[in-house]
Length: 205
Image (cartoon, rainbow, N blue to C red):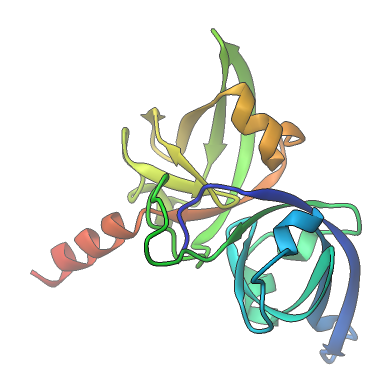
């Protein structure tokens, strides 16, 4: 489990295919992600879970300023990780420990789908970002509710049929991938866990 509070920005160093399908396309991939040394210091163990731009992945190798993860074809099909190239920036969060401060909201690291960045408009001291999501996810996103965008816990400010807006303050932009995000870019979306279960309960009545 995670909180959606990003603690470091990493960079994709290498991408290596693991196996191929009938068309010769990679099925799985191993990613090596470079990190600030302080992110790896202390207790990032083999097998640890790290949210990489919102996607929970398992550490399979590591060094003083990097770690490696294996990404399955299923994950590549439902997240934007398949678009990453060496140099891509990655929002990083280590898994939540008992007693840690819950600064954002409960985030599972299970990406629900891919959204698309529509616009970024300065608004007073922040920037209003607007995203479009698949209609299958739009019904779970509510004004003043929570959503995780590339692993960042955010409060939804407004909602239309299949779009929503959030405000990003300069600090958030400086410590996350929002600093380099641009209209047209894909983003990983995880809906609020509470919304998912409320909808499921409503369906079963």
